[in-house]
View (cartoon, rainbow, N blue to C red):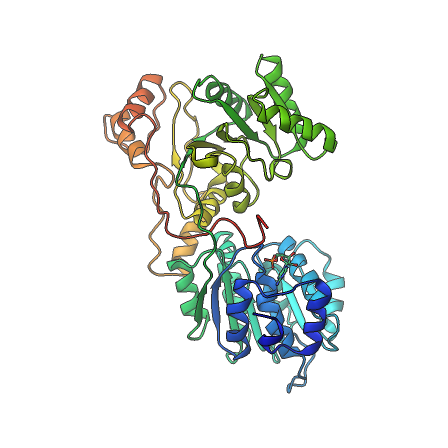
Length: 473
Ligand code: AMP
């Protein structure tokens, strides 16, 4: 299929041509015709699939015809969970709409000065890209006129849900005209998204693009709750003593940590090295060759540097720090279990990482079972829903089931514990108090025994494709 056959405005086609796009991506191919006919659409599409153009090209096509309404307010509103995504969307919009006379984009994001935003909002706006919290502020101050709004896009709606922007999004939606066309984009379309759609969309067309499904079935995913950095180091040391670990990649959040950990492991006698973006290409290549030849057992790396590493001998991936984005989790753990082998992916998470973990699990469609190492049990019990909120504040999980959906199951008290761990909890606590975490090694040993040694993975593997359309191209 060609872009020409989609019947988009010639000035949009011209910009697409400038961008070097030769044909629409699958999500564009399916979503654009539906959107041009005016239907509401809910689509599963991840970053990297070309989803921005999938909603923005039809939005711009609308803007090519003048509005009937006499107002200066936006005709298209895009809500995004993060500032970064909002900026990406704004940039893409400016690129696709550069030849159109009525495609002025304004971004309204948290953390930016109000006076400038007030000024921007007092002028003519065609497309408004915003994060929910700040937009609600402006709505409450009466600074936004939605009377000519034609299209509303909820981009990465699943992330907005997970981040607790529910009420803000609802407030915004209720301030827009009922005649609007509404689009919902989410990494996965599950029952929570169906509920959102049922409330905010009007008989939406459902588009699910077949992305290459997460190939994670040969990778055992494990989770270790950690108290602090020293606990992480102890667990890492424990994992590295396992003779089944032939080669491992340890992922850190920063280049500096990659260096520090690699140095410290080398000092302890491990064949370890760092790999990150501050190293010269020559050094990076040299390290990768050494890894491939088996001269390095533990590679400590950052996300960017580790992209594309394809070494069959990697038996373990260890997320010393959780990745910032769920997609990176899939990318990281995919460094093991190459060429038909099996692999183990271990993630360290603190009690505050609950929301983050949820995002990862939602993205992969799989639960990560928690594990305990005898003698290295976490002191702090993780809280379901995550976050360091005070007790009186409902967790995101609570909020979510309260406001968005009636049939989302209530948060489980032990959200990230496998069934095996639950049983272990029973045996740890003679009184049957499953909220008590075992403190002694012998209790934890019982835990391991009853979880079948390695624990079992509680897999819901029925959603989420992992690799985005352009990845691997
Ligand atoms: P997105 O999923 O919207 O973040 O887009 C991912 C990347 O794909 C961006 O760099 C876009 O510029 C690019 N892209 C979007 N649509 C196409 C297309 N039809 N052909 C080639 N590249 C595209």
